[in-house]
Amino acid sequence: MKRHFLLTLALFMLATSSAPAAEPLKVGIIGLDTSHVIAFSNTLNKPGPVSEALNCRVVAAYPQGSPDIESSTKRVAGYTTDIQKLGVEIVPSIEELLKRVDCVLLETNDGRPHLEQALPCFKAGKPTFIDKPIAGSLADCIAIQDAAKKYNCPMFSSSSLRYGKLTREVRGGSLGKIKSAETSGPADLEKTHPDLFWYGIHGVESLFTVMGTGCEMVTRKKTPEGKIEVVGEWVGGRIGTYRENGKYTGKAVGEKGEGAVGDSDGYGPLIEQIAKFFHSKQPPIPEAETLEIYAFMEAADESKRRGGEPVEIEEVIAKARPLAAKRLAELGVK
Image (cartoon, rainbow, N blue to C red; front, top):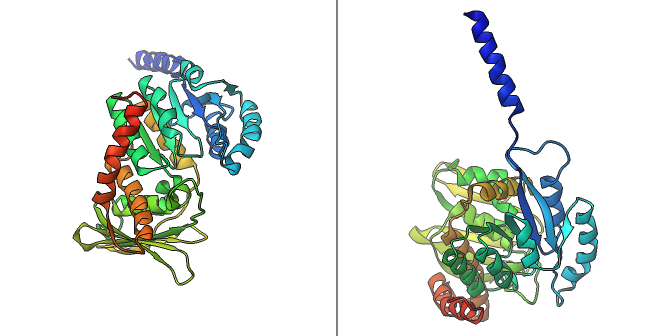
């Protein structure tokens, strides 16, 4: 009996050890003008056994930049060379890219062309991660979400700051329900984008990670040092504040006390979430939360235009929806 058991166990171990590993998903990159493409590709294409948690490899890239943003165009040649060293094929178009891959990292640093770049990915049914900012306007953000739904293609967008360890713990309930929070971080401006879309998105994403949805009113102010300060009023009188600062930091106050948030944990946790999304096809962030993040930042710009008056989130969303429909119609999406 014992001999039979040992023989059965040995055969089982032999069978499982020799079972072929699942083939990695083939990933394509659109845009080679951000350091993210090298960081992500280094992780996914690391030599040696492929991590089961990741099991994705970047195989092709389309090296598009933005001709009117110098910080974008000057990076393309160098990043193209760097990514080729990782065994990634450079292709001449998005259409050629989509023939070679299972899923897409839309990495173009400029949010303005994201809608046009994402549409062929959605039509082809390729799960797509769109790096920050999801778009160059709130209207395009809505258009991207509507197009993804129309073509039934899974999509999500996020800053890596969402996955800072302390921020994730608070999101998970370590402080109970959050009463108020404040986050801060750099807010470098780019004239082609609303103020917070370009770099402030990181701190704003941290803020919404701990506060969740339900922001109703946004007021743009200045700190005593003349830096950007945006105060949001959430349902139930909760207050969330973003401030421009040189480092990522913050604090949340909850039912169980208070704690630090807004930290950066590098790209690793975000890459893991992206890989999980590519395999499961289940976006890890509610669509409504992403929309509210960009509405918050758009409302901050509108408040600035009005001299610091409070602006309702619903007002800017309502204004953007017909513009989104128009954009899609112009691109042949009915």
